[in-house]
Picture 1 (cartoon, rainbow, N blue to C red):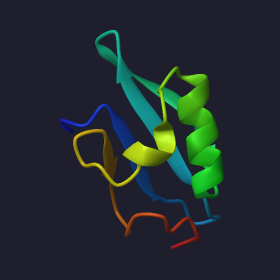
Picture 2 (cartoon, rainbow, N blue to C red; picture 1 turned 90 degrees about the horizontal axis):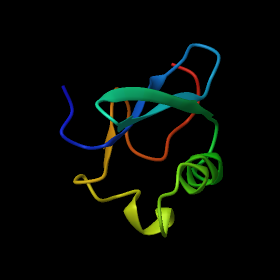
Picture 3 (cartoon, rainbow, N blue to C red; picture 1 turned 180 degrees about the vertical axis):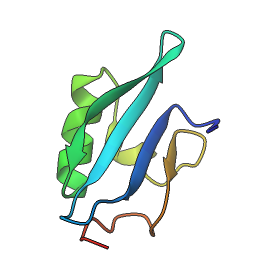
Length: 74
C-alpha cells in the first residue's frame, strides 16, 4: 500500500499509465496519463494546487513499475 496520496501505476502494454488518488478513504481512478501534461491536468481537476511542483515529491506522488515521467509501453 502506498503512503503517497497519488499513484502513477506501471505503463500499460499499449502505453500510458493509470493514475489513482487516495481520497475519502478509497482509491479513485483519475485516468490514464500519456504525458506529464496529462498527469498535471488530472491533478488540477482533482483539486491539487500547483501539481507540477509535486510530481517529483514522493510524499505526494509514487511512481510504480517504471521511472518517473516515462509513459511509453512496456
